Length: 140
Image 1 (tube, one colour):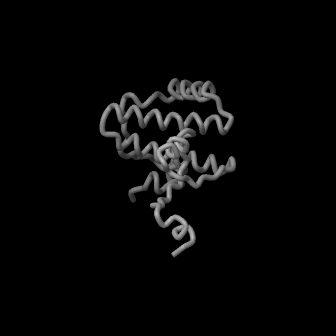
Image 2 (cartoon, helix red, strand yellow):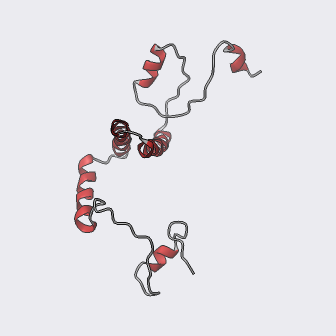
Image 3 (cartoon, rainbow, N blue to C red):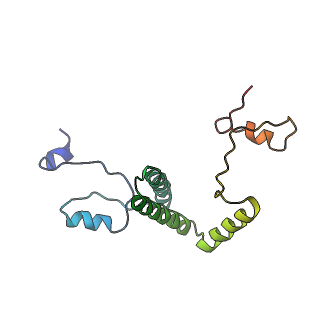
């Protein structure tokens, strides 16, 4: 039996291994949980924010009700806010770029979907599409 398990034989141990909101550790301790925590370096923090964004995005996709969707979107937004702040990016900068992209390329509101493209060899972006075969598989 490993040493940790011997010391805590009367406790159930779960690997948690994820970034949580700032007040969650105190809330869990208030309920009687003992926690093993660590302070993250900047690089570890950014890596964990990226993992959290994937987690929250999956939860947005899996939301079963409007209320749950709102909760999960709020969580995803919070992760995005933290990612922006950690990278010294302001919400104003993001909004300017978002608006410029909407003006130049449009939004996603019209629900347009491209299934396939048929292009000639001299099409401007053919090399780009061929450089990403997992994203744009070419049918021969």
